[in-house]
Amino acid sequence: PKPFNFVIPEFNYEEYMLKKAASVNKALDNAVPMQEPKKIHEAMRYSLLAGGKRVRPILCIAACELAGGDESLAIPMACAVEMIHTMSLIHDDLPCMDNDDLRRGKPANHKMFGEETAVLAGDALLSLAFEHIAANTKDGSASRVVRAIAELGSAVGADGLVAGQSVDLMSEGKQLNLKELEYIHIHKTSKLLEAAAVCGAIMGGGNSTMIERIRSYARCIGLLFQVVDDILDVTKSSEELGKTAGKDLASDKATYPKLMGLEKAKNFAKMLVAKAVEELNCFDTIKAAPLLHLANYIAHRQN
Ligand code: GRG
Image 1 (cartoon, helix red, strand yellow):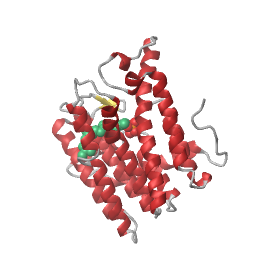
Image 2 (cartoon, protein in one colour):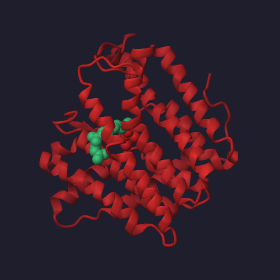
Image 3 (cartoon, helix red, strand yellow):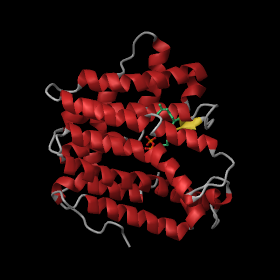
Image 4 (cartoon, protein in one colour):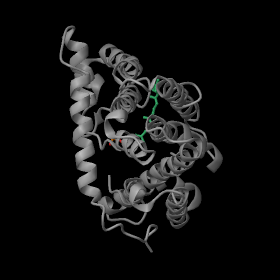
């Protein structure tokens, strides 16, 4: 059964996603122009414009629109979220972290530019993210900008992404239980998705009830994102190997399918998407269509 069993005929999801991704890509390109010193700017642009799915910035814009604002109010915030996401990927791939050579099908930043430049490119993107919000958000919204910056900062630092990464690194070689696995996912993945949506809703002028419903929605899809990732790891590698047991069921890494079984993990994903949809039932369905479809997309994504 489909976890989300209604369509909104008035709404063309693919067209919406393509249009928003194009706006985000253009704004990101403008936000980091090629300039001196060339190497660092080239490294920043290399990863930032490497063609991610842009889920977080689109979530930010859609939440802003749902809360009553227009796209232009959320664009600097949306770009900042993608800059932070990108810097976290650059640092995650470093030899001292996950030590990955490839990212988005291309050589990782440190493989292209060297470790020192990759560290600096990440640092520069993190700093630019906050500068970009403060310097480029439309006039008249200073108090919203301050609230959103506080939200984003806390999602990224030692209570957010950094906490998730730190606990993940410390857990290497340990057998995690579900609660520990969830802590890592909530911090490494959900926090930034949640901040993207909440910051969008703040910029859009949403009231506190709207913002909190959007927050709960985003929490669900953040966890959903990771559960689906884990399920894809199993099902994809099963397909590739032509076997029933996938890579992650065999490896040491804790995943939802490994800890609860594949069927239960799939049911958990269905429960999360249903809860995410339920959180938005206080909004007009047509207006909430982008976020409803985004939840559905995350549940059914293939990469
Ligand atoms: C944030 C200050 C700061 C430091 C970084 C390295 C680190 C601390 C955190 C790691 C965070 C991390 C790599 C989380 C995984 C997030 C995740 C699910 C990535 C994949 O996201 P997609 O599928 O990727 O949206 P694309 O490529 O489409 O953007």
